[in-house]
Amino acid sequence: MKKLFLFAALSFSTLIFSQKKYVLVIHGGAGTITKASMTPEKEKAYTQKLKEALKAGYSEIKKGNSSVEAVAASIVILEDSPLFNAGKGAVFTADGKNDLDASIMNGKDKSAGAISGVHTIKNPIKAAIAVMEKSPHVMLSGLGAEQFAAEQKLELVNPEYFWTIERWDGLQKLKKKETEKKIGQNMKNEILKSYEIDQKFGTVGAVALDKNGNIAAGTSTGGMTNKKWNRIGDAPIIGAGTYADSLVGISCTGWGEYFIRATAARTIAAKMEYQNKDIKTASQETIDEIEKLGGDGGLIALDKNGNIAMPFNTSGMYRGAVTENGEIEIEIYK
Ligand code: ASP
Figure (spheres, rainbow, N blue to C red):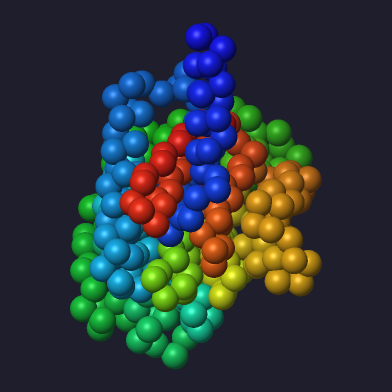
């Protein structure tokens, strides 16, 4: 009897995130996320929010709306939640600001939009979509991006809206550790050290496949705690943090510098297009390459047949997916 139960449990777990046709996959960031560091309340809060985001995106797909609309619906829920490092709850820069980045790509026509370094746009993903659909450009930054968002009548907020005590405390802790850990060799090493001790990422992303077979991918983030000099990570860079074409869509999270150097998202699509690799192999190889370079993080990918991959080399990644029948699956730890 015991054996039978074990067998049933094993076959159930191997079925999770496999063999089904998925239409939406999301992440809420990868990092040092362990069961030991989590309270049951926190775990429940994250699970519920991921579920809500999956439901919102799935409802768009079910209605027959586009994959871009599904991605937007999911990401807006996560941006509005202080749990994640995107929109409200974004991490702080070294000078105490919330500097937001986001991007979107529509695999149907390879159109794309991104914004970087904004402080007043309530939902950065909406601004990225507006750049894609309403401007002749792909990427806008800073004040110009905010001006554009205002012209598009997107909701603007006072920068204080993004402030949360957890992220503020996170910045203070990191600054303290940074001073303690200064190794004095050169600026580059000191900055690298300060990122190494900030192992809690929390970017959000979504990839959707709509009823017409079109894929879209989007990513939104506050970047990395204590970032300096208007640093920009991979999240708003098409081909690095986000990519979608007619075969596959990808959204990444993790130590952005490495994802940029590995042109992570595009590399997965290229492996599939030119080397005929399946989504799992292409995604895992790319994470392995990032690890070899010294970086960490994870990604989500969804292909035109509804297969998904969610590799990461950290201890956890908030992630979830919905099948075409609306079954929801959520995982946090490795
Ligand atoms: N990739 C983001 C960045 O480097 C951070 C993250 O995903 O947590 O800005």
